[in-house]
Length: 204
Image (cartoon, rainbow, N blue to C red; front, side, top):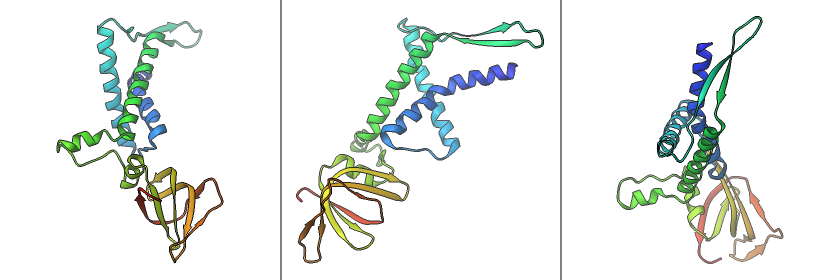
């Protein structure tokens, strides 16, 4: 039983971090495929959440997280009942939501560029240049498919999963070999096949 209680305490400590990781994945599309790195990230985020939470608890703005173990009478076995104060859980959830929003904004808005400007890093939050190009630019795009065909359109949505990319275009036109354009009769044209390259242009 003590080992079970200790496991529950460990789970309570890690839950805010896993909660933040799960929430950040929704708006950003980032995925952590390495279990060890996922646990390390969750632990680091949990530490940050608890630091913020402890500050407000010590300041008297938030209720403390009270976890108590109470014995429950039983005819055959001695059972233990775990009681957690609801106010502390709500406060931790609120802080986790706030941290998730800030991290999502940092990734989607590329706040890392502030560190790049002062020369502290050359890295970005983007998994590959594809992500940053479509997030920071409002341009028409010229796409060459693996088949050799070209088309131009206004990017509506894009996604990137490892080596696979997909792109959705509005007002899309095929580009003929002589350079003339042929309108695609669809409100939205989804490209899911092989893409050789993508060019961004201010004008169509």
